Image (cartoon, rainbow, N blue to C red; front, side, top):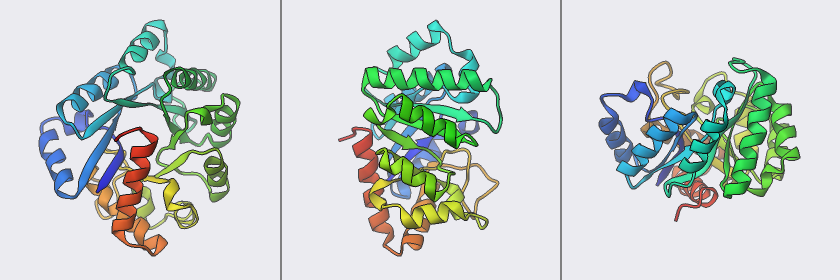
Amino acid sequence: MLFDTHAHLEDQKFKGDEVEVIKRAREKGVSLILNVGYNLLHAQKSIALADKYDFIYSSVGLHPHDAKDGDKYLWDELYKLARHPKVVALGEMGLDYYWDNSPRNVQRDVFRHQIGMAKDLQLPIIIHDRDAHQDVLTIVKEERAFEVGGVFHAYSGSWEMAKEVLNLGFYISIGGPVTFKNARKILEVVEKAPLTSLLIETDCPYLTPHPYRGKRNEPGFVKLVAEKIAEIKKITYEEVATVTRENGMKIFGIS
């Protein structure tokens, strides 16, 4: 019943045991995985993975870390890849002011460019937002990204920001940090946001939930995220699993 809406199974950290990781995920009830491409090489690998498994889908995009690498060749290639039948979204894209691996003005330009691509291709977007909340919201509004919709992945903003995100018609994706003992803002967001606006994810191999924090994350651990949301909202795990799966299928156009 579970849909891990953000994974990076093509990552080097899964080399050698990818098959076992996917098998464990299936045993824990994961029926769908969206593997997220974040530069040209990883987009190609992600699509190859999606071609191997009927329950794995892919996205393609350019992460803000790699925004400095954007050129005509890259955009042409990503545009071609985006037309693959297993590609259901563009991204991840957005802004990262924590690491600043690409100049901020370049990040903003590349974010705007990819929103334009998404509107042209009529695909939803997967937004990466780290320490750049106001600029992300400004660009989303100015570029009318709500025309295609999408998801704020690994959401880390406040409830006040979440209300704006929800009013724009975007989904909020909840990952491993909701299980952390020092989590505060995300608990309020989960408590107050309607379940019909939430997705669940691992962002594996990153953001591993408690009690495995510090170890490699994997799709099967998304069950811990669903269980925590059920606890916070005082509803059943089955309801969380079912509704978040339906939400993901709806926004990504998976029947």
